[in-house]
Image 1 (cartoon, rainbow, N blue to C red):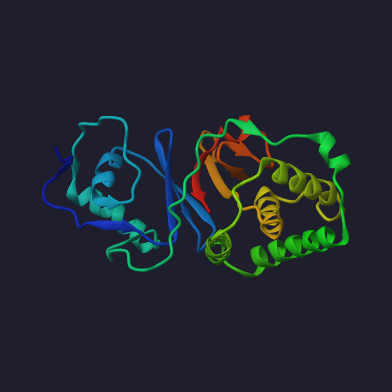
Image 2 (cartoon, one colour):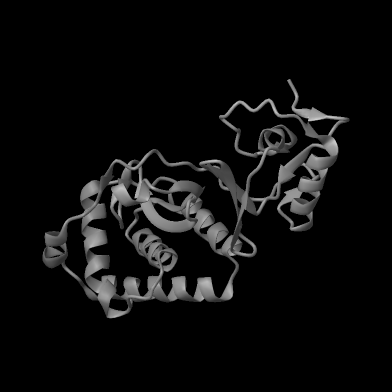
Length: 246
């Protein structure tokens, strides 16, 4: 049964650069072009699920009818902000990757003291950190995400399966070198991008994840392979709902 009264509402889509997830009673939108988040809530949420392709479904049954005029006003505001579009998706790149729930963490403080750091790894580390800093400073998040996804798609063809031992060794090397250039003010997004860059040099291709939570709002980024979190505690990241998986 449609919850929209007094006419039909135009079919819409999430813009190619917009990602969405449901957190409690809101839908959070991530605009990669502007690197901004927007929370949307209210009685019109179930109707938005019907009107917008890609909008997270509402698990709560809500029989409150919403007029087409009210719904159109909401969608018009979102279109003016560039978050929705009336054009069917074309060939624009869009990540459709997902990750399972995080169930374990790659935490091994002793391995950082045992790992060997050669000149090649030192160079890869410095290059990875510099590339992450330059990308986040000079490019839109949309461009950064697209570049990481394209590299992953290209390099994973014929690549070895994920190796826990190799990942443990590489992450330990990253953690040992990290204090040389990172400060306490460095953010999780930069940290995760630098680690993803570094692991790519090692032939390891986990997922780069951005998640959100509400009440209050918060965003976080981490690196994950399957249910294993590589650079954080799984208990911490489970507080966040993944909104973008690269």
